[in-house]
Amino acid sequence: MRYFTLSDAEASARTEILDEAARACSVSFRARPADRDRPIAFQHLDRYFAGVNVTQTILDNFQGYRSPEIARKDPTPRLILTVTSGPYRIEQNGRVNCEQTGSMVASWSRDAWRHQGDEPVRARAITVTMEELGLPYPFLRDVMVRNIGVSPLGPLVGRYLADLANLPPMSPEQAATLASPTIDLLRALLTTAAGDEFRSRGPLGDSLGMRIMMHLRTHVTDPELSAGKLAAHFGISRRQVYAVLARMGVTLGEWIRTERLQRAARDLANPANALLPVATIARMCGFADHSSFSRVFKQRYGCTPSEWRVADAYLTARQEQLSLPLIAEIASETRG
Image 1 (cartoon, rainbow, N blue to C red):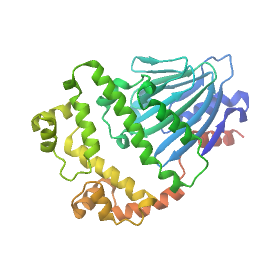
Image 2: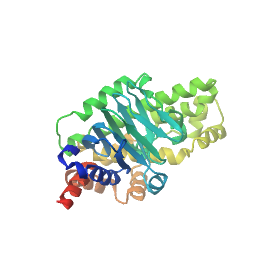
Image 3: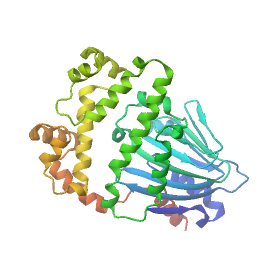
Image 4: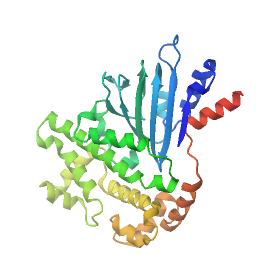
């Protein structure tokens, strides 16, 4: 957990320090004052729960922008959920959200965006990789840059994010145990909001892809999950199952395998599961055969499940996340 405030830097260097720090973030961007004739304010808390990044910022006269060039160079697509307490402008792909009383807005890292706060406002954000989130972008695009705080889970997620940001310092192992439930809650929020969008646009048939994805997510640990089972559940043909998912950019077998492997990797890294045999975790995640699980796990992650468990415990204890505050500190020291 790191704290960062521009008030610690000389006024003449603040814009340059913040911009240099912003360029080094996991979702890199450029930063500057919204009004060059006024000072910029930026007080920032940055913390990680395994791969989940949570930030809390009080800002004023701030503009952040991510260019198409920066977005194209980013190898890892991420989703960012930003929750604000007052007027804060978010733009992406021709959509704009700026509500005077605050909002809860999702955006993603693959496209250019612009954020702007012209007056003092608090912004909390949570960032996860699209891979960890496990929801295809075509499924989510209708809720991007819209206020989803009005959806049924919005208030709950807002309170949870505030509590998460304000937790006392904890060990990397303790923080890692919160990653999975946090991703699950974020996924539930987005799925609910996306479902509302689907239903508002047309008849139930138009939401078939969304309903299939929700069923997949709920039953992915079933070893017998298949196109045939999905077809029987929804009363359609196997061919229709594949066609509906293809329109959402989803390949069924690949999605199931990837989702199960990600769950297994998280469960292996979870200190609470330290005494569970690898074979048990494999079965919990939907793999019926331990040897085939070990083979596909090594193909994806470059090591065996047992090696992953040992290596993750070591890295969790020693790896330092590269964050905006750290880069700002380095920049300040360099100028000193």
